[in-house]
Amino acid sequence: MDFTVDPANLAMIEALSNARSPSGFEEETHAAALPYLRRSGQVMDDPLRNLYCFPDRKEGKPLLMLDAHGDEVGFMIHSIHDNGTLRFVTLGRWNLNTLPSSKVRVRNALGEWIPGIIAAKPVHFMTASEREHPSLNLQDLVIDVGACSREEAVHDFHLRIGEPAVSDVRFSYDPEHDIMMGKGFDCRIGCAALIETLHRLAGESLAINIAGVLSAQEEVGERGVRVAVNRIAPDIAICFEGCPADDTFTAPYAIQTALKKGPMLRFMDVSVICSPRFQRFALDLAAEKGIPVQASVREGGGNNGAVIQTAGNGIPVIVIGIPVRYIHSHYGITTYHDFEAAVRLAVAVARSLTPEKIASF
Image (cartoon, rainbow, N blue to C red):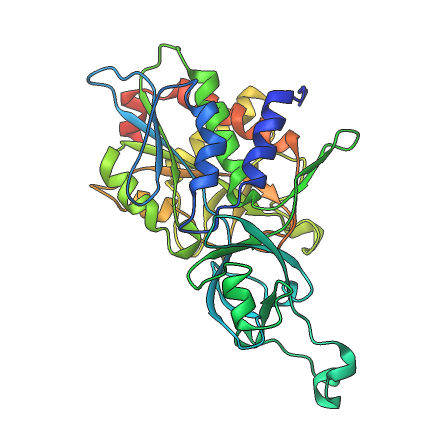
């Protein structure tokens, strides 16, 4: 697939990736997305921090919902120890082995993001059993911002319980190899694809109406989309995702989500069986248009599509997943190639949908 990297899109992806928005704290995602969403329609939010974009609607046309969640896995401060370290809980599922010795940012009472490190016990202080049989318990992990007492953490660093923390990682792009590295690509790369899809379709005369949603709190149980899907009542939906790439962990015959081979459309995961007829329609359309795409049958995972599918009277849904290596850890790797292919597929699907076609799904 031939493509050219659009500097404006790259800047948008960077801003979204760098936004510090763990579940429940999506404000920075909103701030990064708003200038781009306003190009395509009217923008509003709701009390759960879902962000909506409504291009011009025509009466009597079915509604296509585009969804991508705006949150990322992160942490919340649980308590402050007497020595000034911070106990935390996770927002979303983490591989605990990735946490020790990693750098994070903790928001304080003044709205500042204070640098800290998730502490790792030096080997010098480990018992023989700890060295020989290492294990991690979340309750034993703490964030250290450098404070020496609880009083210093509270009064000098202005820290308090209930505040979020997030990976301290900045976006980078290698144009020679088309490699984007950063945090939060689950699902900020999906947010970027949604925004660009709306932009490319803006002003076109389609047989459908479109609404875009950057939904909240997906990583803690798909909570935001439950509100959003009831609010806009779509007839059909596409969920964008940053989905886990399997090309560095899986036997070659079983790889279904590799970098630089296009977005992954899942037939199922543990939460959803995507609409089989809609799924085949999208895969056939990709082949017709020469858009690279991958298909998968997932044995794990879950996504907003499960909630959308069972809302109302039942809604046909597919998931366009952009491959990301090492999601639910501090660092991710993805590519502009797969972002572009995902946008092209979503645009092609939107242009091809009619009331009759939707009814056939």
